[in-house]
Length: 285
Image (cartoon, rainbow, N blue to C red; front, side):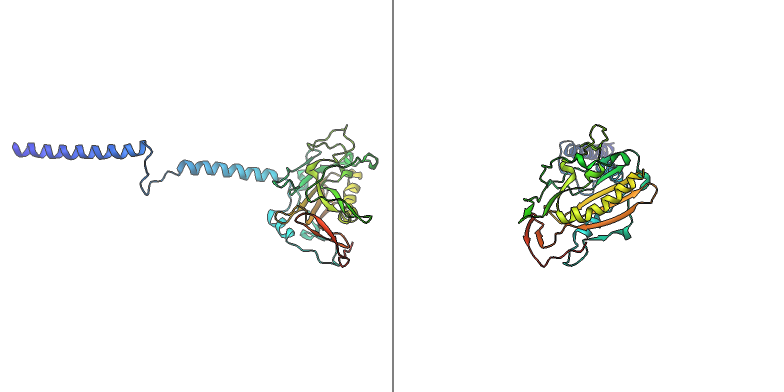
């Protein structure tokens, strides 16, 4: 009987000690103590991360539902250096648009927000139709100074333009929110989200070639998706060039080009936009 009592007391002592140990460990957790190695507390975080990732992916899909170049493609364009004597523009993707023609749903323009440096470094995309062709007599004075902007002439030679991403000539009725308003026939000419510092040569001699193609298609009552993306290198304030592409819903209009932001007889410091005379700089139209 005495031996049995001793065994019971010993077992009872072991049970009490075990309870004390368990209670101590539980106290560490509930009081915010350190977590033992090997304990995985990431299940909730992983679930949240997965949901966030899905939201990001969905947002990216929404932004690219009408097509356009990839970020990698834009980075490749930004690395290109113009060589004197070269043509003012090159074709991209064998001159075929990457826009999705069936994405045309509503007459409007999607204006991207300015980036952290106040640059128009993202794509503006117009879903255009015949009523957007603007009357040239309705031009207004431009007063917005985009990044890299400087006094726009030297010795009577115009150097800089406030270049529109979505041209004034195809934006009749479009307001600053990108919606169509029949009372706004002069178009959206002073929207900071639609302007960048462009050379007069690139704007007036080259970009107009492609804008005229868009106008022609619109006058023929075609629906057109037109996208313009200034290409900046790093944190530079003046764009190295601009990617223009367009496609009509019937496929008859289809182009994809990159225009160098250059000017004959001048070279630019793209970090701040300043120009200096260089008679060796030649540009082919």
